[in-house]
Amino acid sequence: MNIFSTIAIMVNNNQMSGADMLLTFLPLIIVVIFFYFFIIRPQKKQEKKDAQMRENLEIGDEVITNGGIVGIVFSIKDDTVVIETGGDRSKIRVKKWAIAKVETIKDE
Image (cartoon, rainbow, N blue to C red; front, side, top):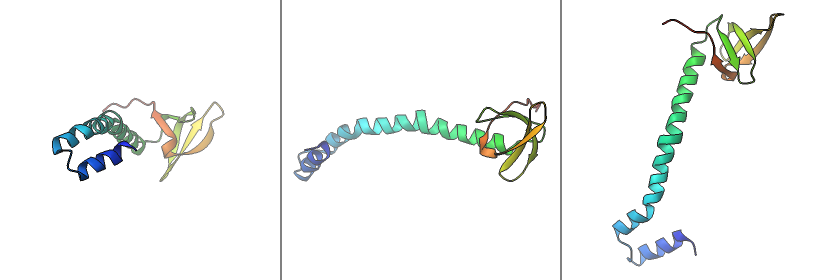
C-alpha cells in the first residue's frame, strides 16, 4: 500500500483533519516552491536575456557559437546569421539560436 492510497483511506474515513493534510503535503509544497525560485525562474531570466542578445545582433559583431566557432557577423536574416571566420575569411551560415555569446563591447 502506498502513501497516497493510505491518505485517501484516511480522508474517506474522516480520520484526517485539514491541518493534518496540510502538514502531510507541506514538504511537497516547499520542494515545488524551491524548484520555482532556484531553478525555473533563473532559467527563464537567462532565456530572455539570450533572446534579447540574439535580437540585438548587428553586422560586425564578434560572436561565439555553441560549437565554439568564433567569427564576425557578415549578414543577418530572419533566423540565420552568416559569420566570417579565420584568416581566409570563410563564411558559415548558422541559426540564430546557435549564437552563444557576443564578444563585441558596445558603448551605451
